[in-house]
Length: 121
Image (tube, rainbow, N blue to C red; front, side, top):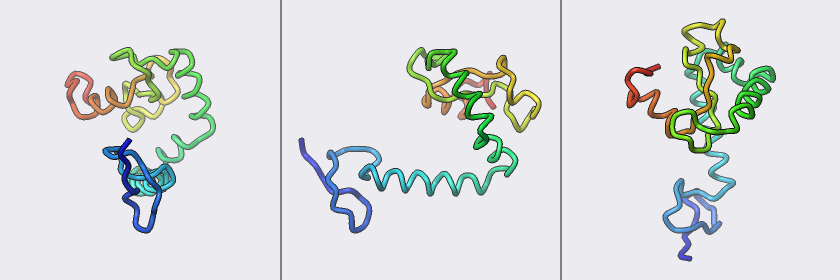
């Protein structure tokens, strides 16, 4: 297998050529955490706190397990609990089981980029 160096400055860790993202495990994790912090700064602090809360984490895990981690759109492995009616639109429905579905990352991106226009959130 052809390998190359991690793209992070001063890192000599070797990774498979063509790997995306082009970082070793450590630097990928650091980069993802930094991007998440930047994203959280732009979001409503109340929503950030909600998604980090222990209650949401337990509820999310329960929904995922009830649906066997299967995406409701494509049948692939899903690990995102999607609110059909967004939390920012109706705060009271944030823990409503009928408002939640399990989706994979790809389908979640499609929902929020209007590829599924009837489901544009």
